[in-house]
Each structure stands twice: as C-alpha cells, then as structure tokens.
Image 1: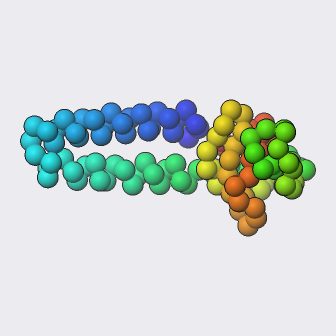
Image 2: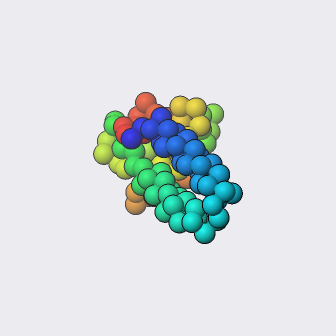
Length: 112
C-alpha cells in the first residue's frame, strides 16, 4: 500500500471513530468502545509495518530531509528501511541492521 493508501486508511479510521463516537452518545459508551479499540491497533500495525527498499547502489542517507543536510553514509540496492514518516520527497526511517532516523530521497526507494 502506498502513502496514498495509508492516508485513505487513516481517513477511513477517522470516519469510523466519528461514527463510533456518535453511536456511543446515543446508545452508551460500553457498546461502542469495543470496535474502536479493535480498529486502532490494526491501523497502527499497518503503518508500523511499512518497509521501503533501496533501488540503487551508493545511495546517500542524510541527517535531514534535503541535500543541505550532512551525508551520514551510503547504502546499496536491496537495503531495507522501516518507514517512520515523509517530508516532501524525502523518507524518514530506520535502516535494517544500521543507522536509525535517516532520510533518503524517494527516487532511490521502492515500496514507499
């Protein structure tokens, strides 16, 4: 699922939460709390499980979301990274078996 898919899923979750809130107001909170509790972990797990893969060799990873930030190192094709977030065309994440909190341009990542 791409970033747009995650955004749609989160938007759907917001609608579900609003609906559950309306149900709680009219039928009692005890009946509405169970669906909300089950939906929240599923959305969190999906966003947390997002993995991007480097698609080229010698790709710089940086300390921030832009070319003005220092290069902290390089990675090669096939390196995986857990997605933490995005800013513009930059992806923030934790490299598997390596640096954490790094930034890589989207042009050098697949599945993001």
